[in-house]
Image (cartoon, rainbow over all chains, first blue to last red; front, side, top):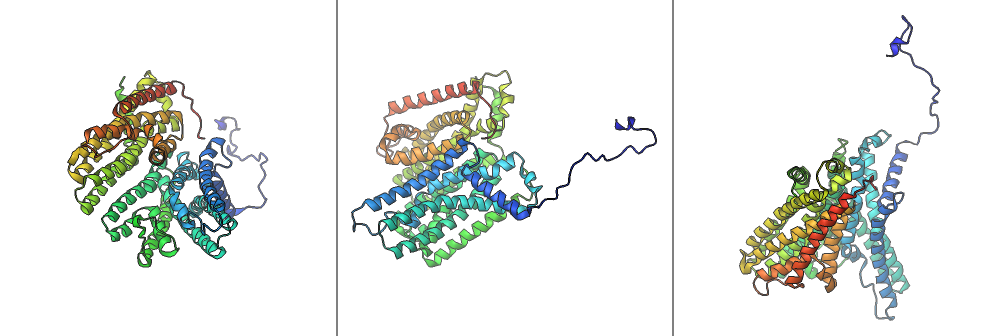
Length: 303
Length: 239
């Protein structure tokens, strides 16, 4: 006991000045911390700043996306002049066609973004910084959405560049490119929100991956199966409404109604403007809803 | 060869609160689809085979196999708690074998039973379709569990690789490159279903003897190799 060493009668408690200096430099504050968290999460989503092994999967998937775009461009450019007036795959159809790849990317990276913090209990360390719950959720959400946007928009840029090289009509291509960008931005927000919610609710990475895949790929498979059957039975009204039940068909519906896309629904019967409003509302509701769920999730920090 | 305590722990890990939710979700979805299709179409053998083949056997069984197979061992290796199991005087191949039995049981329970129910809903086992697909699901469960359990011991990203195999190799390549179908658990299981179902109801690209031999060899090899991997397991940090 320390008291045995101090002389009788003296106050045993004392504070020694052992020479620590106060920090009096600039404090970077909340916005800086939020920005750092955002950029770290975004880099982490592509494995930058992490081990070589964790770069493999995101980079391979990114390569698949860009290579597909490059092949489409090569086909368009190599075609004899005059035989092609537009790209073989339109800007809006690109992300929908490649949505299994996007789903895999999200399934692999969304758990990386949030589950590790939860599993290793590092979340309290974040909140010992001057950020608040909203900042953490916003930074992670924005990072995941930006990562998905990079994954889907860069191939579109390649397509656009290729279309201009192949001397397709400039006005029509620019319009299609713009519509494609709006559609993939919406897709990135929707997918990132749903993926992060699934990942934050199941902190074990393996189960997080499976849950994300279950929500995206399986719901898409299920909806298209039933749609195909409904279409074969000529129940086109059912086809239109069934699309509400999977994220990819939701985006498909929105862009068919508002962004001049051709629907991938069986029979090509996408929703019109009226049903399209419902689609858009559901998409926006899901985005807001996943933000709200994430905010709720981080009210209690920990597993 | 079978260690009840290991089995009990594995069941608990697999059927814990939230994990079981994913496992219940897929069969529930299958039943919902079956009911919806039955109401839309009525009894139709072709449609029933499409739904059971396209959704149940092609996506649901592999996915449940991935969850159960890798989930039986992956999380324990991931968080390092496997060392407490390995330090007990239980042979490593015994641990693998026990976990395999549990994974097979869980996969069968969550894939074959819903497949059978969905088959009954769709066409009341006309042309033996429900039975055929149930048998296919049972057989596929064994092979998927063994393969994905092996993946769980080999890689930390077992779930992703398992999904890539199930969704990209079997679904995508299998439909584009006919040769890929010979090396697909789904087709091996289908060749059994082909024998059971009425003539022409179900088609498989692999002959029955080849399929049976491949199934047995793959399951045996995967289990043996998983036991070997566990003998020389190195624990590393995340990443």
